[in-house]
Amino acid sequence: MITSIARAALFLTVTAFVFAIWAFWGMAGPRISEIFLSSGFLQLPEPLIPPIESLPGSGEVMSKAGQWGDGFGALNALFAGLAFTGALAALFMQGEATERQNKDLHRQRFESSYFELLSLLREARREVRFRYSLPYRKANKISGTSERGQMQTEAAAFRTAVYEMRYLIRTKTTITSITRPQLERLYRIGIHARFESTFGPYFRIVYTILRRIRDDKILSNKEKIQYANLLRSQLTSHELSLAGFNGLMPQANDFSQLITEFHMLKYLPPGMARRALEQLYDEEAFAARND
Image 1 (tube, rainbow, N blue to C red):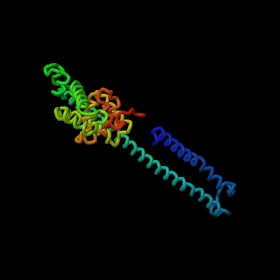
Image 2: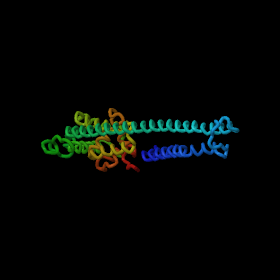
Image 3: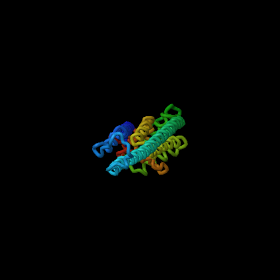
Image 4: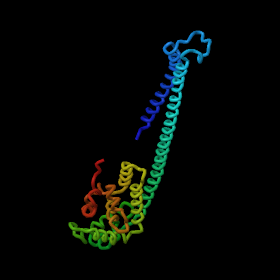
């Protein structure tokens, strides 16, 4: 695409060229006329009393003068063509400017909506609740009246849910041969079914943000990566780990694909059940970007 500086340079060059032609023709016109009517073609007596039509050879002079005059028609056609070209160029540049303006307005609207969704995400995080299950409390000798045994909120709720999920994986599966249905069932029964009312809205907002980024037709790929990275920076490792488990459920639609496409799990530490997720997600979900 031609840059603004290149377009301006091209416009100035064409303008200077047209002006040079106009100035040359204006200054050279009288001289050209003089050459046609001078001794080089026909010597005219001074003063010229009889009309030129009555002089010998006047037909040739008039013919050449007419040919010179016809040159103005070509010049007029040149200027008309240049004017038409300039009009087309103006329309083209106006269309480009309008398109850029529309794209800028779209980016502003997208960014406004994006940050509103991030604000809703933070509000949904504050509403998240989770408590260890009775089998977990018994296995780890946690009293129901202790601080660890009480209902956890916000970031602590995600951390508690990840510990519960790690316990379920360790006691209910063979980590070396875990399958997607197994892991999906453990998450659905052990986490989602017990506290869907708080986790559900939270992960739906995460899904909505990622899908809007992916489906946007105006944002460049670089801009999409930047917005996805910004979202990931807002989430703790526990939140990202649970998002990976949530994406395995059938009702999550293509959440797992979005997690993979935007490399949402690449900073997930080993202690966040990463080993189990690595068996079910493509390597792209954990890979760093080359760009």
